[in-house]
Length: 313
Image (cartoon, rainbow, N blue to C red; front, side):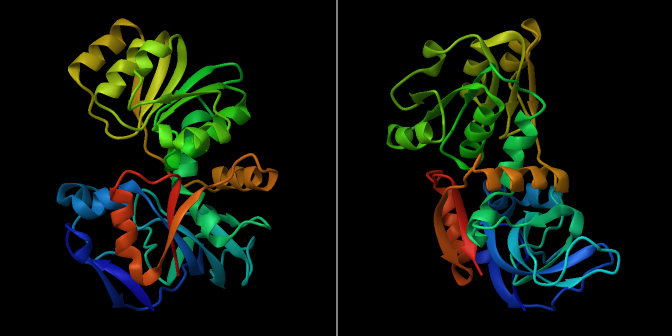
């Protein structure tokens, strides 16, 4: 089979399409013929940054990046009883760890996968994995109906799922994006939109129960100023917070924390049910052929993607 091998961190030229052996599923795994792969900002960061690559993968080289897949079951491990050959499945595979998703075939733990709902394409299913799980795992234990929630970068991968999930929970949702994406953000269910390029959100909102920050830096510091004492902020970009942010948070008993999604079959089942009900709908901004996977990385690097970028195999 063909897969993209990464021998060292760096530019997209380091993603090398190569012939490798098809994996064999372990007792608890499924062998998936991959039909679609979702590309995330974390994929790009790990590919670019040597220290982060070493942190995630250790010294293993070469390696196959990626975690988000949708495809068809072609073989089943001896201990797997809830899937059959021919099932269409999707999931976030072994995150954080070796997902090996940039390949024509992937061996994945059955517990990380669920069946694709009728009416959902492979591309849409692949898109509803890491980003959607992040939004679900962040919001479900932290907000309730009636809460006033601010979601930064609402048109992005995590953001566009977060708006929909927060609305399903019953929150009042405010979201930032560019003016170009205002209609998109409001179509997702946001109650208010703020144009981050021309408006200062910290002057327009107050008394927030929760903030989902996908940007960090000054945005995090300003978000603290409009969050109620005793409430919380989840920051996705980095676990490193400025002394100013930590000091303000301590004074006002605001919990600021970094969050990293983890593979979870039960949560994937929740997303599957939300897809079936129409509670969430992924927005696939652009698709690329498998041979153009490196170009998909470049698209993600622009930070101008609305929704998700998907590679079709």
